Length: 277
Image (cartoon, rainbow, N blue to C red; front, side, top):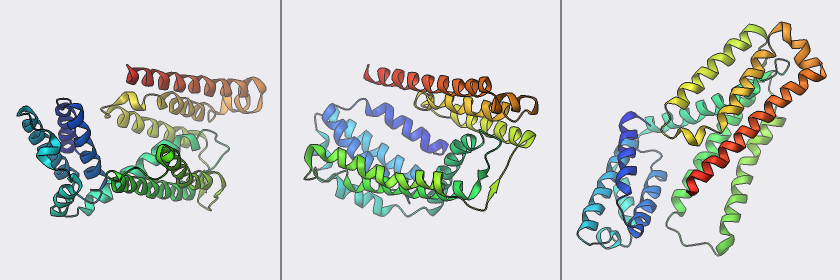
């Protein structure tokens, strides 16, 4: 998100707390529909339209008028009319796809550099990144199209079916990661690997620091940092033999990963606990 888009979204989040439960449900369905159906639109324009609608609903609420009475019982049609008036913004689409790919590479690059004896498959990273990007766009499109649809005939089992469908959609990406091998494989030992890991770690730290909701990403920090440390120390020539070829060294590396996983689950538990409270 750009600075302007982020500012509008933050203002929207603050004002939305003024809505009554019924009005909030009505508006958040509309918000979800417009955001997921506006992939090709200018996100700043969409957020401005959503903020305008929200302020109108709040004003009507203060006059005792419900959102459904003020905005109508067919919000999808009104939203479609608004979206139709906003021209497509292909630059926004390119930026979004680029951001998703960049995020994927930043997240997966450090794990792929953990052991110096394992090559980094640039081709696999690229192809899986493209696949996951397309899968994410497909999920977003599905959410937008089904926001105002009635519950499927599966009823209460609908969420299970959707979850299984999402798993089926995402699974090929993981299969590509494990089984696809391309000629674009490079080894990054020694100082080259250490330098690249350090650069990636700094880039991830900057991205994390710029996030408004750091708690959502905090559980992943221990794992990424531990993998980066393992990738660095196993590339130090004086430590390689001990860490990679002796039992105490391997136990130490495995212990580090276990600690990182425990911190991951602990932070997840804390985050869920705070959300529940």
